[in-house]
Image 1: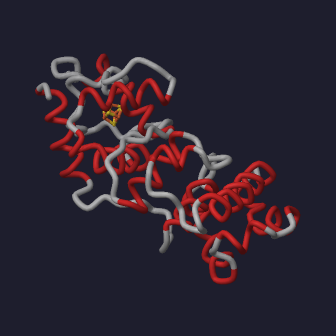
Image 2: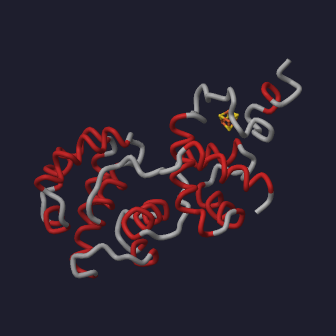
Length: 215
Ligand code: SF4
């Protein structure tokens, strides 16, 4: 790692020493469903929906044969409910038919589930199975570009670049910390740049806040 990468790892750890997902789940299958629902939706809203839904339905067999309209009603407030309902239903069938009712713990197997893309598979790997991955969501993508780690709006290219920059042992925690940093400090609109430890190399704020330009 170069000096900048070391600073990023160290300072993000200071901000969020015990970073963890803000989605609520208790099993790998609940993790998968919550992550599917979280696309283009806040964790708070997903938790509101799943806190009720998981009390009654939280296994692949519950969703595999559920009428699609019923599932759509349950998850309606998460947005994109038709596509998300289809993804949950198809993934549930796949898990029952090909994985004996258990969410697979290998990244390659997760990717074969209907409606599960690279980001979802990576998040499930981290959260459900303690794997090493650095999934790129909107926050990780924004922060990575602002910090000059990448220069792309393509999440998969960003992920590949971050994997090269940071040793594997840092990936999962870095993902969680970058998500929280992007959500609460380096926000899309009005980032809180005062006293940010990355002012010296942040591309977003380099003119306004860089040392020497503050006076
Ligand atoms: S200086 Fe501002 S824009 Fe740059 S990383 Fe810090 S909070 Fe984000």
